[in-house]
Length: 558
Image 1 (cartoon, rainbow, N blue to C red):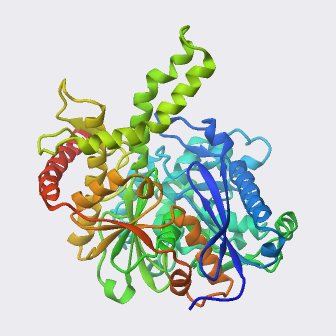
Image 2: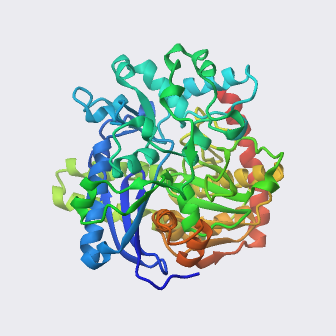
Image 3: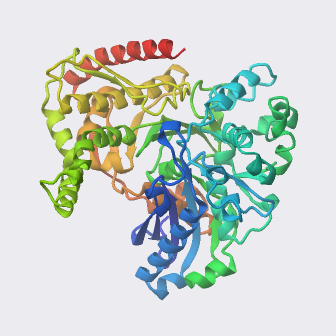
């Protein structure tokens, strides 16, 4: 039921490169104001080393972005709207944890750790913990019960415990000062509510269940001796973490006085429990039971919900977990995804742009002209490649790519795997390789859908969300052809921020359930891509080739 009173909510979406905040009319879901902030330290490449797969983010990037975007939104909207803001909810990337002291302060905000990457947030795409993930997997195989059963049976280097263990091993100073370990999505609500005791920090079931091995069947986290017998550095950590979790439909608390005064808001504003961007994005994109909601950005997160009672006895192998209430309370939330999607296209764009980056060294062109030329070509490159790739004929013997440029997330996590392209010759041009990359990422998406079906979970349709879904008709048509099923594209590109706003409306009591908030505030769909049967039949053959090449790469890796 739609509301007629004037109430507003704020949704905050922390992405890989930036944070976006929106003010949404809780009655109809319409956007009132929006603001974007690019992380300055991240933009400058600080604290990262791609050659080592190390990607860290400074908490100041998050705090400065939070302050600026909400402040700018409220400035745009005006004081009348500010007086009627009822709730705030936040989503972030994940698993993106950080070492904190007993007060819940990230170590990078303390003297002596300001420039230490190990004291910063370990971004979701950081793969420095592949050894630790491998050891966790081997260790879990010797224990009963199987503590990996609800995370697809394989623990990933992208997740909570592997990253914690790696940091403790890599940096003695951080290890000595690290009292606890906190996900980004749990830390921001803690900050907004003025938290100063990490034991009072409320942890969301989303991060806890999918990345931290928390499950009601275990009575919470696995016991201390499971971790201490893996490495003595983990001894005692469970006691400094959490024994209770909350859904994102529950409040973390009320807006702290400092933030309320800074933004001109009331301390009666309710702050919701945080969650991962893909989970709230699926809600913003109006997820339905058994429809795979694909949040497509730098990576993909594929979300599927099903009634809990229909999931009894079913465990899906090789995904990123199945957790009751992690997406919608009362529903089983299942997560999968690809470690590189938009990142694969960005890599190719960077590769092709290398000669352009050298223009400034040429005596034939001045610096300003070189910069303008680089920017113009770079901005148009993906669109032009897409147009040319779409014109190419489709044949089973075309160039073939496997999409593991950042390892494989699902099915069956293995971040040590690498990508490959086969079938090239002297006639292979840039559009041909781009076409192969697009098809490879879509084949990777099909492998995920196939795994759900093989495990007894039907996939009735696809929902496309995020920047790639909105901006790339060619990629979406290939996706429909490869999957051989329609894909609906949601109207708004900002489904994660909108989803956060829907949760904010729920925790503020404006709607009794997330489903009602989603129904009232959802913006619907504007495009559907339907498969071309003639192309789908060719892609079915190429998909088998993709799997064969992937099998070869795995054997080579081992």
